[in-house]
Image (tube, rainbow, N blue to C red):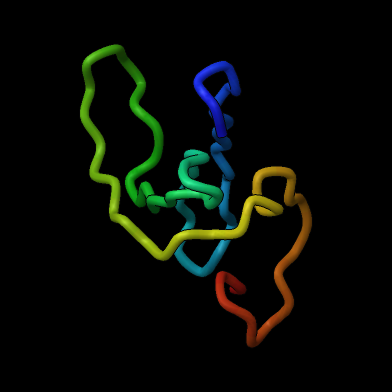
Length: 75
């Protein structure tokens, strides 16, 4: 990535066993990822816990669908 390449991001609404959001930021050829378990802020300045999780492949930036049982992120 060079200085003129935009960095992409995605926010996934993850309907797993425990509903949460996944925030992913493109950096160094991967998606740096965080789980946001308490939902999105309702007002500007409101803080939310974001738990760092493993990096994801860039392909996850366009992922939609269901993750099969037994795979990471399913449920």
